[in-house]
Length: 221
Image (tube, rainbow, N blue to C red; front, side):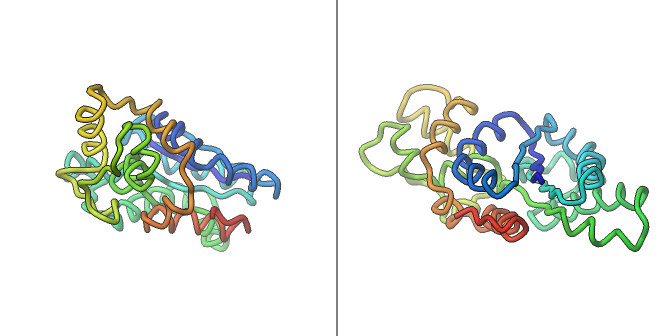
């Protein structure tokens, strides 16, 4: 049995794998795997999320699937079928894409049971929201004496004009005089973070963790 989590890029895989390391071990002990899959970028994500999810759900009817793209950016999709201005709309877009593919392949009687194994979520507004929630670990990475600040709380309340990644990039330039390295820095920060503490500060992210926990019987925190 597996949980397939679809994300935009490899940096998401690196960071989430670090944050979920302890939870992944607990899932493994109960017979569950959790696998992160990159779809390349946001545009490719929208083009592929439907068929990729359905392929997994129909191959093994015990498996689960989660959609976890970034909410930012969204303006370039304003005049497309993927238009979304907020988290709810992005969840609806993903759900509709999965439904369209599922309707082509299963009987109506089986439709709802398959859709119940898919959860549409998003990183609000991007992966770096988790770094802002892991404040102590971010402080250590930045070699700061005092805890960093300067963002909304909870950090998911940031916006399109100043998403979490921009804040993290500014912090690295200011305190370390270097560029934020998405793959290595996010992994280093989150591998020492507590999943429960991060989830507590990120309601949308926590709802996804809780859904997986409910379905598998293995809570994330």
